[in-house]
Every structure is written in structure tokens, then in C-alpha cells.
Length: 339
Image (tube, rainbow, N blue to C red; front, top):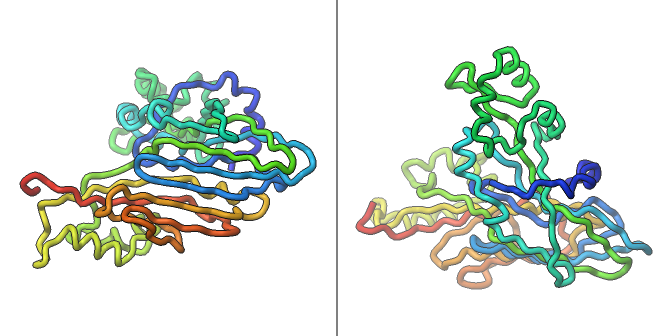
């Protein structure tokens, strides 16, 4: 949760940059995070997730006798992956503001959010240090920055690497890369009147990660289904899911059906901030829509049930999220003439 750093940076909001160029690999966009306050309860959260749309509606109540004004942050995941080449980063990170089309409403009225970028190394704010060095936080947007880094004397490279700002290239001795990430938040202030519930809603097009191919094919699945693999720990893929995959991917004689090929999509949502309120979420409802009936879907959430050809739902009372949400959708798409 974002607390003191946002308070300290609130005065800088007017100067916060409006540019973006973020990741399309897999984005865990999440609900509005407020500073912790034991006077405000989250009465309900109604969350809908699909590959085309995420929408969420919260209801909050201020239980104190006076208005409470807090800093609100809509957090995006840190980007880029530390150590990646600038060209790779630029290709992989389109503009957030042009891509997700985020809309936020409070009590039905559209509100604006301001952007704040914070450079970090291992969770530590390094913005001030980068400014001292004259380095851009969003380094992949500076075409000449990589060359300037690698023109530094070797002793400076080693010192900055020891500081954690740079990483040595294992394949090219003497070459270095930036090793910080940038955490972006859209922020605003929110006043909660005493005793009056308020509703916060937002909707956006999610950044959907994906791959054409799947490690679930029989000849390569091996470690992919180990207990500590991402398929298990991140998406809770179970035997029923694998059987469903095999029915679509393989013929009755066990041979691979080359008239279809697997496409994986991944959607992330930052669910855990819902645990930062006065008491648990009184009523939580999640709906996941896989889009087409023949798609497979898996996520780590107990109590989920099918409510339609493409939709799944879970409803919980007094819910305290313990982890973020990750959804795996697999499509066995038809090929033209086989693979």
C-alpha cells in the first residue's frame, strides 16, 4: 500500500509528467488504493474481469463524526523489467493513457487523476539520486542514454552497479544497463463525508499478456505442472483444466490435433489493497468472463461457480484479500490446414 511517500510527494503533483510508455506483457491493474484509515470501511466491491474490460464499483463509509480527506492512488505495476534493452522496452510498453482508456467516477461523476512516476530500486525511491546524476527515470525514451552510460569510466560503472542503479551485461563485459524500475500511480484526493456512503467506480481496457503456444502440451509440460510452477502457484491450474486442454489439443488416439493451436492470455488485478480498510470487505463479488464458451479459464479463488456459458462468479462476505488476482485464459484456436 502507498502511504507516506505519496503524502510527501503530494506537493509535486502539479509537476507530475503526463507521458507514459508502459508494459503490454502482463499488467496487474488494481483498485483505487487509499491511505490506511481505520474510520473508513469498504462496504462492497463488485469486480468484473474480461480480456476486453475491467470494471469495479466500491462503496465506502466514513464512520467518524467529521469529513476525512485522503490521498487516492490508482497504482500501475512497476516498469520496465530491470536490465532490458531500451529498444525492447520501447516496443513492449505502449502508452498507458492511450491504451487503457481509464475512466473513474465518484458518486456517478467523472473525476480526473494526475500522474506520478517514481523510480525505485528494490522498492527504494531513487528519484532524487537520478536527478543528481542528470538521468531520466524513463530512460528508454532517451535514445542516447544507453550510449552515454556505456561511455562512463569503468570505475564509475562499478560504483553505480554496487549502488544498485546499473547492472553489468553478462554477455558483453564492460557494458551496463539501467536497473531501476518506474512505479506509476494516478492520484487524486478524496473527501469522505461522515456517515454517508460514497461510490467509486472505474473501468478500463486491461493490458492482456499472452503467448501463441503453451507449455501445457504433453511433450513439454513436465516442469510446467510442478507444484511451484506459475501454472500452479499463479493460476491454480488443476487436473480438470489439463483434461479440458487435452480434449481440445489431442485426438482420440493420443496424437496432437494440428488443426488447433493454443493461445494463452493472462490478466492481472491488484486485489490485495482491499484488505487495508476498517474491517474486512463486507460484500465482495467477482465475475470473470472468458469470452467464448470453448475457452479454458483458471484462477486462484475458492468458491467460484459457473453462472453462464462464459461467466464465473464468486460472492464472499467479510472478505479480506490475501493475494492479488491472476487469470489464465487458454484458447485452442483453429489453424488453416494444420500446423
